[in-house]
Image (cartoon, rainbow, N blue to C red; front, side, top):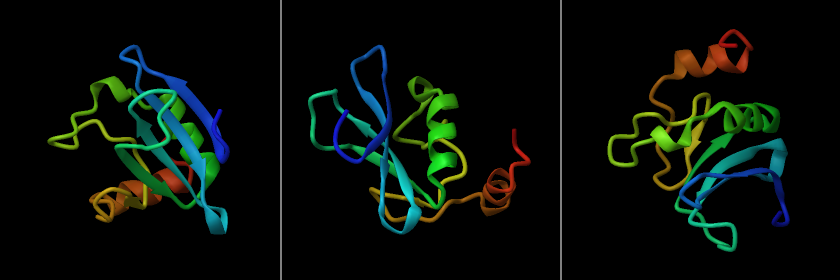
Length: 101
């Protein structure tokens, strides 16, 4: 595991889903091209690292469509590659409060 990574899993196509710690108690889910890569292609920031790990565990990353953003992980605050805020703030609030489990 890379420094700063608190969770990782390899997808069948070789990409890596990782949760990386950030400052101020935040975390991000990122997709890396492979386990040896020191870069990531997409990411989503979370205010809570526990939520980020839970979402990374249950997220079906293989169904995610990068072009349409369908199948993104849920509960994120901001998309790391575009800076866009979450488009479903009500659902995000439910997930953060533990009502989506």
